[in-house]
Length: 554
Image 1 (cartoon, rainbow, N blue to C red):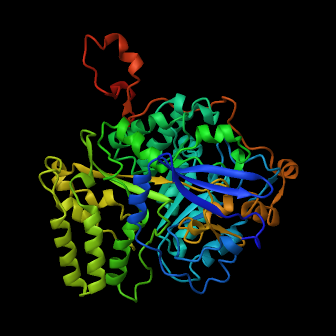
Image 2: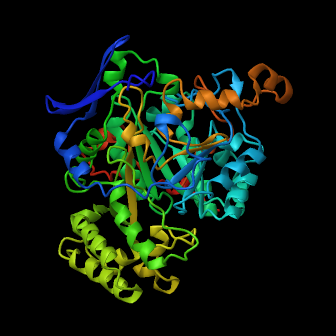
Image 3: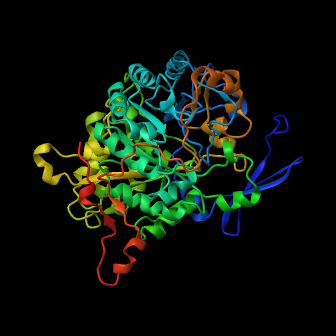
């Protein structure tokens, strides 16, 4: 390790009922941080790791970044920054948007080259293209980039967004859908203005609600992306699950992301870091406590890589001549976890799928089916039998049919509308039976300098596509590293020169509200209990509220 400046050896230890990383630098002293607040949880997640994807091949022009080089797989989500400009001034912000003194805004030709290179090496798999920033919708060629990604053949194109542009302009939403946009990763910190106020926008929660309404109205899928900061908003993450369940026809997925101290927060004090640090294990326990035990840390959570058992069987069934391999998410078990929740779309009631479906055994069964490779017809029959034998009808919600689990595990890599909830919809003539949806809840924990592990970067599934190849998400955003190198190599202009030519774009900060955002919405929200406290003794209040006069139709 002495041959690589800035890299030091670390130990991962179990102490005081926690898993910690401890490392010592001859110059800067000792560093220690928490990896898991529940050793049993981490042991289980690591034991269920399905393994790496194939080693990447023919990738010398794409992966060439020293000890941070990605070595395995194609990745699952390719992040492409369209600009480092943003219309907010968030803290936390992993890229320190608006404050680096220059603009980095790749040209449309740069972006096309990045997307072209993304299909130049093996394994050739379907991936999500995630346009990001900054705020990607500030890019003057945002819609053209979406259309080009669709033209290349990527089946899902998304935007990582604060939602302001989508909330402001329904016509922009329609244009994005027409260009080929499939969904958004929508920044979302809680179900009240209070839980969003640390972002500095006066009416940010209203912006989020309007964005969700607008996006859903044009058929763009919504994933809520929640940065969890301990002592700031971790006490409200159960309400976010309840909000998503109550609005399951508008929200597909929740991606919880424990804060990583990069960008604007890289110089955080040790005291503040210890206060704000949050782990995936802590997230599962908070959700257990806030949701009345409906999600259990040691039953309902699996590493994202466990789904790759299904990747393998689909690769086998599609055959060697398929134009795309199945999407694969073989990230390190410490990077990401997930669970699936069955939701009654009419009542908002929900239950963990893994309370009545033995997913752990099912993945083992799928691995056996892959290894035996008995042809399409027999393999499909084996998959159906594996579903039947792992399904507990007595524990399932009343009226939940086993056919819906078959629909859940029957995606298509050639159909961009192959979301699990699209497959679970019944035919229009059987609308009365169209009851069930599935909410996916993920936990993604990105690294920072205090917990960095090169074993994770070499199998990164969320690389950045840049003008200098594809780089691990954490290697790109952590330290004085690849982001600073590449943005300075390819910066568009110094900030003063940019403003002189293009003028300043609107930035909402210091409590400034986004103008023109309606408060009316048709989303179901958890009630603020304080509002009902006066009537609590007299009336039994519903935990949710929809005001009839606030329903907005299109």
